[in-house]
Length: 298
Ligand SMILES: Nc1ncnc2c1ncn2[C@@H]1O[C@H](COP(=O)(O)OP(=O)(O)O)[C@@H](O)[C@H]1O
Ligand SMILES: [Mg+2]
Image (cartoon, rainbow, N blue to C red; front, side, top):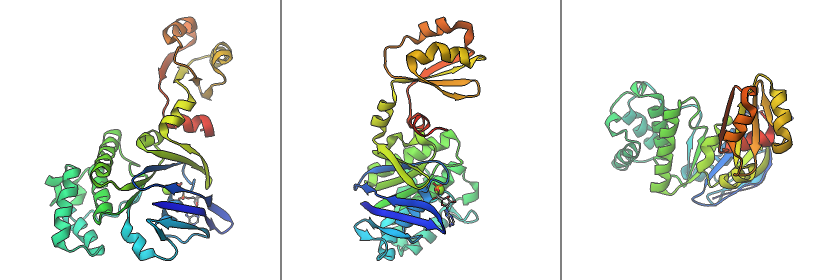
């Protein structure tokens, strides 16, 4: 569905994306992960013909981006960090307006809008003004807008940024339902990395360069069995006790994070041994955010 060869975008002397080689199969849920300024949005802009690559090639839905901007824009759905909706209009008006831009006549657009609003449990909001919806509901309408024309690929550029946790979870339920109902390929960027766990494949990008990638399960499993977080008034004492067994921790102020490679550590016993040297201690399974922190630092 997406194939790139040495795709590159320079702004003056600065390189936003360098020699990107991607291959994304139809139906995949793909995640491009990295910090602010890494080149995620630029990649999406090149793949959706919104910006011209400096060099390299990209095929999207079998079409060369450089030769087929109109056809590509019909094949892709886009949801940006910034909403594309008009808050002074109703949900219905916003979606019918977007449908008209895709040349969808109201006879086709109306049942499609019903279908999407019911996926998002927002049927009852159809005639409400957008400004009366919650942030999460508005983001769901943005996604509905992005898929009105049944695109083959949906690009989601940090779709949950600025939302609180319950709303972020709701957005992920909607995306999952969409994927299930419509089988579309999804290209996601996010810096809430733990949210990309549902992806089939993730790649990390840093300063425009693609880093390592893999399935989330594999990357998390390779990291270790547990992450042990300890806060202590005397971090050096904790380090001298635990580093011989677990290696050098990540350190931030009074918090230490150890990577625990195996499943057989008795944390309760460890807690007793450390006793008063710790103010708090918790252990948990690693997530993709831990993979990122341990690989690339804070
Ligand atoms: N229109 C532009 N003009 C100049 N520099 C840009 C432009 N768009 C992006 N950049 C630069 O390219 C780099 C990658 O940006 P971007 O793709 O937006 O990153 P991300 O989406 O990962 O946060 C950044 O250093 C950014 O400042
Ligand atoms: Mg961005």
